[in-house]
Image (cartoon, rainbow, N blue to C red):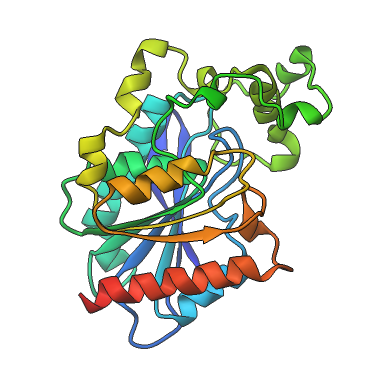
Length: 286
């Protein structure tokens, strides 16, 4: 795919970048998908979306913009969200001309922690060009008991020694963290019930990073998908969101892991992206 990469902001000396994948179908739909990756806020990178899905979206006429954000614990959640707000400002001011777009309209699209960040951005945005939100196995609140307790599931993995973590944390912020290198940070945090303090040390700030019922009810149209057997983020988040958000499409996946679309040998991922595209087409038709 003919991708191009631009720097949208510099955070403490770290260039934060966005990569644009143009639609291959002509004419392209007047909606750009702004993608935020997952990784528990501590690992991952903007280009983790499998090429299979990028091609499906491109062939359907949708351009994709994948966006960096600084990772925790080197950066904290307030800084992460401020950087992403800069990304939205940059896209609004420069995206149309920079990428030769027919419209400034966009949909926020996130997976896991990226979906959480998309929820935060959408809830605090008054931008009329924000036309929708897509949450793939995401969440919208940190007040979930399992986020603050040792995880039964993650404690089936070998224990990560606390001393090992010190060598993983960098002195400078970073926006790309390979899962092979950074996953132990997340694993240890979930094993000990200390995940949230990795990215939000001040407990008194947690409420400011939860969506209220009123904020959920004020969201634009939302596409929701998650596995009923999600071992990482309770499926109830997706169920509750579907009940509280006025305009939702819910696509449940039965009995698969948290990031069910990572397994390209199974049909669930492709089927979900087909439903996602159908939902996007409905936004465009409106």
